[in-house]
Image 1 (cartoon, helix red, strand yellow):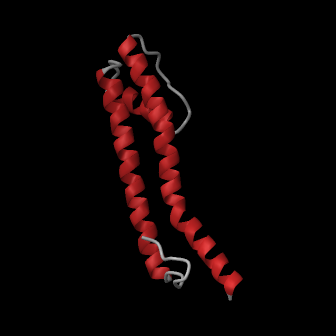
Image 2 (cartoon, one colour; image 1 turned 180 degrees about the vertical axis):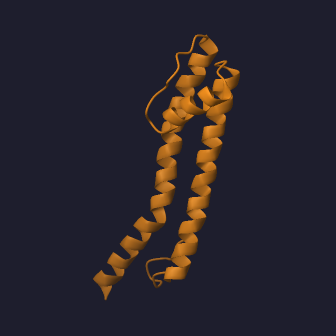
Length: 114
């Protein structure tokens, strides 16, 4: 996927393609995560679509829930979704920063050798 330390740094065009690919993967991870939350809040929490969207967005963004949940199933879902959202958000950030971080370290390594 990435060039090895003995290989030359990828061209700017190749780097942009790689970055766009990772942005697309991130987009699908976040859309999947948001959809999971919306459907969970709608089905288990009994919230409307807009309220489900707001709650899922707020939890996925790390802000916290908006509406109070009454059923035990909804509360268990909210807790599990909050844990999942934290991992999904951090994973998405790591995926997005990986090509940038790799390029920085690769250039630094080449400058050290050269």
